[in-house]
Image (cartoon, rainbow, N blue to C red; front, side, top):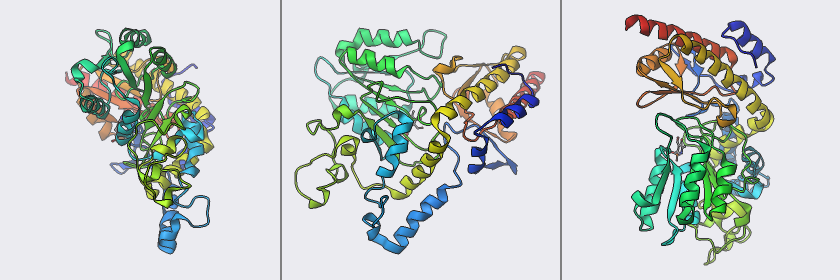
Length: 429
Ligand SMILES: Cc1ncc(COP(=O)(O)O)c(C=O)c1O
């Protein structure tokens, strides 16, 4: 697509955007009494206007039926509430319904998955992950390795960028898997790297891991609702994600997990069990001896947070209507427009560079800008101008134009603000 740094093009692209109406289904926050330009959906997605009604529906059931809410005569009573989420959730991650389950929080689910899928032995005990993984993932890995009596220094193998680079080469990842494969128990990668915005080739990593005899799992916090996923076809063993970023389900809202259906009837697999993972038909017999439910449901621990689940359901409804395919199409165009404008500015003022891969196939909507200098001054300036983005130490600004609610005009306006700020910073220097 041919871009230009112009308001006319932004206006035209917004007019042609078949998803443009979705913006109106979200509350846009204000900064300095002006509607914000929100590029922070990679951190916390905006609130859908429909969420309150979904919450209120469950508040009403609680008010009027109290405990009967669990088993009242409705398909989405609280006992079965998670089932109403499986269809749209499985579509988003490319899974069968039995393979997905909404539950807990992301870090909790990571631990639960490692209990099952990280089973180190004296000869096979390593975990391969990306260098600079999200800190919570690093702590999960470190603590699990120690829990099993291994030394993280030896057992954790990080794949890093080459000198002077920020992102990873596919062949370097595969090479590390080949080199350490026969002493590795688990490969755990972020599907889309939170800092650089790099989208990894999950299919290739899974294939290489399986050829080496390891389990393979992904943290999809930054991938779900951002890029199309095919977890089942890629034969991934497990995956986890949160719902408060691109899935717009509210701060700390409940997370999700994928467990490949090949493990659906494996009561022998070690797991941390709770009564909500028990075979649902027999759960209320309250008997001794854990019998897991079929599929991912067999990893549930506790009865679920219905208010949080209601917020997830509101969001899933929007994704169902918009469809991930159409969102991805717009996303590639919107992020491409942002990239073009930033590169135009950079030609004249090279104080930053985009460290996210230039290939749309290797990224989602997020672009990460690395500043040689003045990162904080730039961030303060865009904030002052009603842009909400995020800053990651020591000098990276992350910008996520989200196809559900961002416009091409948002991107153009950001470009003007950055261009003016760069000029001001240069004049000061
Ligand atoms: C990639 C990634 N993993 C894990 C987490 C931790 O999520 P939670 O606090 O929901 O467990 C985050 C949070 O932003 C994240 O971005």
